[in-house]
Length: 283
Ligand code: ADP
Image (cartoon, rainbow, N blue to C red; front, side, top):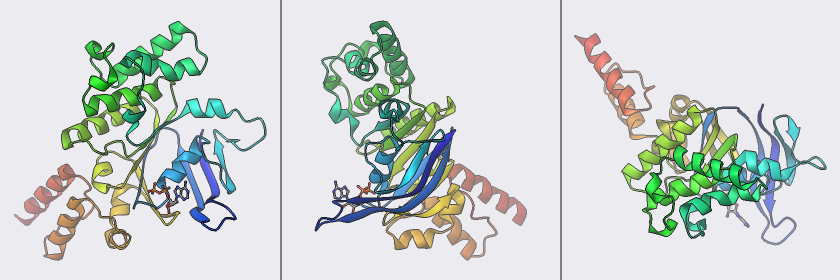
């Protein structure tokens, strides 16, 4: 069970004067339960890529397999795919529209054709999963804070009980506290077994959380690996307008200055431990 992307290319405006190749022969496999970070500069193809995974965009060439089924085969159930591969767009709170939070979260499961009881059970469960206090359930979504609105919008997708959750820049516009809370929430969802695909332009954001990073550049996968291996290419990342997390630079600098540290640390905690270890060794 997985998502397999095979030689997928995507052209916007195919055959027209403004034709644009947004994806160029992308091949990737995303196993179940993985927390994948998709990083890249604006315009590198991240949004185009993720919109292929739930069938919102169709590949110009190549194909995609979801749980070993070709999603482009005749009679493939796209509606089911969209409920199993949930997509949380950038600033999803802009799409809240119902008079109260609970109704908003019911929208997705109701649209799947579920009966009222099942719809409401799922909405309740989803709101609990995102940690929204009960007293907000019957308030207008517009009265909530930015971070809470975003939780409600995420709950709206969770209520469809997806196996894969894709989030496009889920921390955009949030303050550092709101950002950490949303990332912790997402990490918690992965721990329940969900596959998570998180799109971001910030390495710093994802370094602490993801199992694997793919770096997109000009519609292709430029790097693919565990965070420490990807960050080891920090010079190439800079060439395409990306930065490794600050910790990477500090450890590289310490090493260059003759301090015997390994440069593998990707989080502040790991860096602290490595520096303390090196200090002990030097005693
Ligand atoms: P990212 O999400 O990394 O910012 P996108 O997938 O949005 O990148 O865009 C990839 C490329 O495709 C960019 O050059 C962008 O200008 C172009 N593009 C995106 N959407 C469209 C569209 N609807 N029509 C034409 N070109 C588009």
